Amino acid sequence: MNNVKNIINDRGNKVANQFKIATDKGVYFQSYESVVCFVPSNYRDGNKVILGGDWNYSRTTIKHLKTFLKGCYLPSVNLEELTTQDIKNHLEKDTFRFIRNLNLATDTTPPKVDFKRVNNDTYGNPRYVCHFLNFAQDYDKALLIANEMGGSKFNNKQYGGGIVFQSYNLAGLEKEILEIK
Image 1 (cartoon, rainbow, N blue to C red):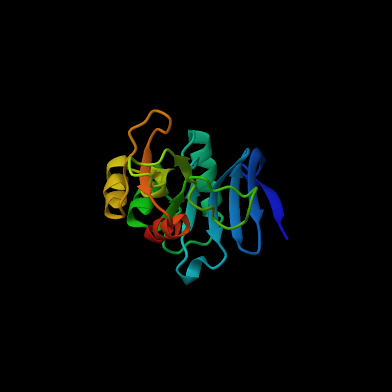
Image 2 (image 1 turned 120 degrees about the vertical axis):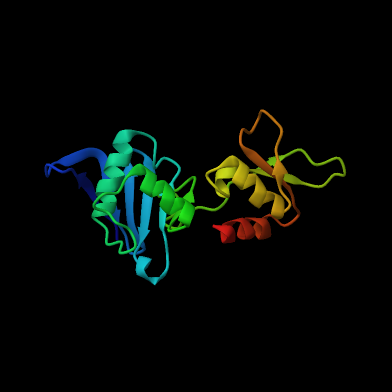
C-alpha cells in the first residue's frame, strides 16, 4: 500500500509537486513526474540510497532532495550540513547508488539497463548500446569500466554518451552491468 504526501518545507508548508511516497519496499522522493530518490526500507542491512538521473536537475530539486533525506534515518550520512558536493562524494564512495531512470510508474524495484539495438558489426554479430550513466557519472570512468566488460565507445550521433556491446546474451550482460553498481 502506498502513502503519498507532499514534502514539507522548512517553514512547515506543503511543497507543490514534491512528494514523499512510502511503500513496503521503501520511501521515494518524486519531483513533478520524475522519481529522484529511493531509500529502501532495509537500508540498514547494507542496501544503498538510490538517486535517479534528475537528482541534480535544479537548485530547487536539490533543496527538496536534502529535505527528503533529512526526513530519513541514514546513520552513515551527516544530514545536518548536507551539500551538493557531499551527495556527489557519496556517489563516488558508493554510499549512494545512481540509476539513470529511477521510475516508479512501471515498478517499485529499481529499473534495468535500457539497451537500444543498433546495426550488427561487420561479422553479423548483434550489437546493443546503453548510456554511460549505467556505469559511472563520469564518461571517461564509465568507458574504462565498460572496456573491461567488452564494451567500447559508440561513435554515432544517434546515441550521445553511448557504450556499445556485441552480445548474444543480453540478460547476462545486463546482470553484469547491474552488479558493478
